[in-house]
Length: 240
Image (cartoon, rainbow, N blue to C red; front, top):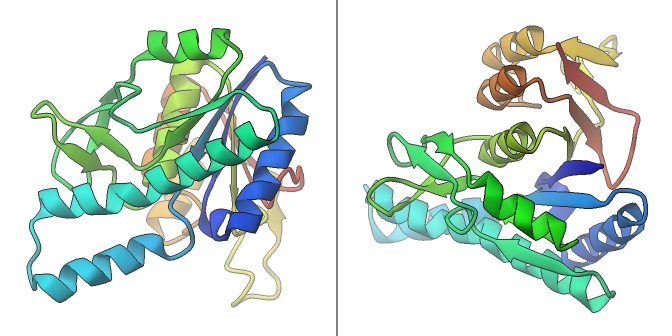
């Protein structure tokens, strides 16, 4: 059995939280043979990097912005791998480039063209926990590109698609609601929602999942779970 997990938002904001994720994954490895983990940047890292860029250039070059902000996810991936290895797990981190995640389109909003499935399969056969820096890939010119808002979710769902497994996305919210629960006290959590309905909600402003990631899930028939914290099962399933 295999699974793709994705951690983003506040779940990877501190070293303590990354350590807790590592301990959870170690326990999970006893039940699931093959685990791929996709991570976002820690906390507000991306915002801080963009702030630095705009302090140096009022209209920064988009290629260099992608080069800069992709380092946030790489940092999270390496730290999680270090944490896992320190507790006896055979983990290894990779950038989008290293897993052959090829992209097409403009910097800051590229599309995934292909991923090196054979490379990933070989790592998983060696019982490694594979950690991937989300949100990034490489274009035909060899430049690092990013996938736009929610790009780490897109990476995770695409990986689950080519590996033929479920994708669990752990983030700041405990599922998908009928409305924003912070604004509407009558909003209720949805236990199961279709890809098309979730994509429609995303296009109408729901920030739980990006429509791009949802439609990749539909294309490959990936069951997508959205939940809060480490291993909560009280979330929402996005399915056919």
